[in-house]
Each structure stands twice: as C-alpha cells, then as structure tokens.
Length: 255
Image 1 (tube, rainbow, N blue to C red):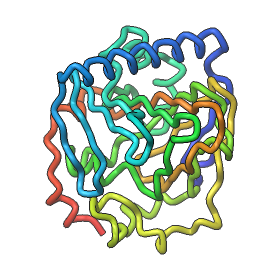
Image 2 (cartoon, rainbow, N blue to C red):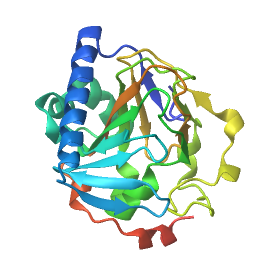
Image 3 (tube, rainbow, N blue to C red):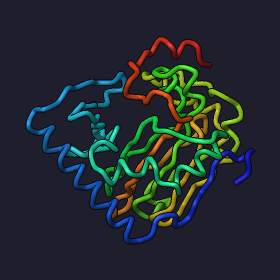
C-alpha cells in the first residue's frame, strides 16, 4: 500500500484456528442477540430508507431489508458481547498498523461491528464513505477514524468482496447522493468507478482503510456466508461512538 492509495491489506494475519474460533463466537453472539430480539427485548428505529434497526442488549441489529424471513445484516457495537471480541481492541497485529495509518503513537476504540452477508441474501451496500455517519455523531473527530476489517470467510467477487476507490480519501468528504433519503451515500456520478479495485483475500486477512475512503460491496450470490468483524480505531483517549447522539443536521455542513 502507498499513502496515496490509502488502504492496506494484510493477508492471512489470523491463522485458521483463530478464524474458526472467531466464526464460532460470531454465530454465538448472533444467536443470543436474535433470541433476545424475538423475546421482545428491543427498541425499534426505522430509517428514512425503510431499513429496520433494533437495539437489543446494547447492540443494534440492522436487518436485511429485502430478505425473506429475518436475516441480520449487521450488529454494532459487538465487542462488549464476548471477551474474545473485546480482546481484539488490544491485539498488536491490529493496533500497530492502525496507529501507523492514523499517525499516532497509540490507538483506542471507536466502534466495533459484525457484518453478515448471508448466502444468497446478503445485500449490496452502495458507494459510501463511513465518515458522514460518524461526523453526524462525533463531529471533526470523525476525520481521525480508520477501520480494520477482519475477514472471517474468504472474500471473493462473487460473495460481495469490498470494492475501494484508491486515493479517494484524499479528496475529503464526497458529494452525497441527492436521491438517497438518508443523506449518507455518495453520489454515484461523483465516483470514478473505473479506478475501483475489488479486494479479494482468504479468511484471516485484514483490510484497513480510513473513514474517507469511498467503497461499496456487491450482494452475496454464492451458497456460502461472508462474515466480517469491523474494528474502527481512533487516537487513544477519545470518546467512543456510542457516547454520541446522531445529529442529521450536521449533514448540511458536508458537500
């Protein structure tokens, strides 16, 4: 990776036994949260795009919008739901390269997330930057956040591997899609899609990129799940995402 490209791929950072353990923990956490949701321990929010979110035991379930039945798209935050997930915040294989990416001596947690692209129903995520949502919560501190994605399954073009536009982070907040009711997606006419790269890698690999990187993911059209753990780091000592309210009015300050 070069500074201009803005992302780093660390292939096979976690070994097969570690990945197997994290897969098992991911499914355990998933099952516990879904069971709590089905028992009525939930607080429901419907976003402007119709997506249904439910707060359950301190995490938010984002349901797949068009899947038959109930399929989880993501859980966030998740590190507090299991000790193995909490331990990743201080894993040197993650913290050292993230500190380098952010240009600081020490990093701390911002938010953790567990993404599911279930076989055949894992949906597309259109072009976006993580930054606008974080900015609506944390303000200018959002400029100093970067994500490490721990791949729990092989990432392929067919199962919706991440697509990034190298160097797009250097342009700052991108023009947002005027047709998106959430105000968070990037205007597809502002994306140089011809420069995009699809990041394919085996399970156990880690992809790192800053919050201003323009990226997307395609649907999972395969018969196998694609699961990922996302750890978003920031300079040490700052407040975590969960401590901030979401203020959509801040979007007016962005392009």
